[in-house]
Length: 230
Length: 101
Length: 96
Image (cartoon, rainbow over all chains, first blue to last red; front, top):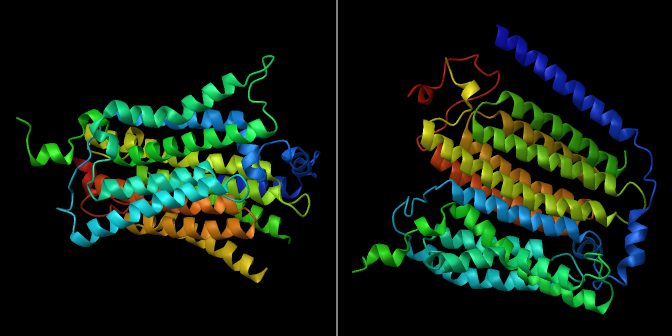
């Protein structure tokens, strides 16, 4: 009875907050500054011609830098739980799945590269490319391929932190008069491409590792399981 | 109702649904689902409001939502790992205060 | 515009179903569907960048994570766990 009452009360409260939110959104005044116009005005000097990429990697590059840091923190956190991946939950991988993954993963890497390249002038970029790479990694994990660097934990850690490292080094190297991440012109285009390549690789590696959940040290690679080391 | 208002209001409705489920559901996986719906609702609200100004949508909220989606998936992964850890430690997928007496 | 109204209603309906269904597996599959339809909404809102990311991450990666977690957390089958919380008998798995 008390629980029913609490449930009803909670529902009413959520409904009221929803109504309040709706009223607030409907009565919002027009934006005081036209951000779209300001982005357009700065676009020529940003190094890329796609506004969203310009915002992500130039005008508000701080956000992106910290976001890649957050991803790395999440990976560190997940690895610290000491979870184990059940390596073969449903028995061995069938031949069709194995063949499909063998053909699909290189194609996905190509698609990721294409998305990355597109990012400077059309929808696409490091995040989408990283997501496709991560998807390829998930496929590898599901078909019991150990991720390439599972055998070299240090290498995997380096791959996962590459994005943040390159981003940090690039932003410090281009720092002028104490102003961080304010690069304009042609130089910016090259810098953005460099950062995007590194970020996409790291995002892909991190997303795949988050799916696998286990830390590389605790992973037993398939080779080791099949033929025990002498 | 304009397109931006329609999707912003959809965001509001989804927000309420997700918020409610987050409060009343006890299973941790359901709480994670609710949190994800809540996040999507916020993104929908932001992007819906991004085009109320003029003809071209404002790219700044778009970039924010893009980073938001990536952060949301990593937060989901962390939450699910925590749930697995909790289950390994206690055999349950609920928070201690939601345990049956 | 009719399309947008239908899409908006479908999104809300899907969210309702996925958050209230007693079947955990069904909830996860509905969530993946929700993510795909949301990608459509991003296209309608002229946000193709977000649509791409949502299709790959929101529906793909999150879906894979959730399906994997469901298989690990509730390997036998689904525990009915619908609101109002505690109005029914405690779920059988909760006793050990």
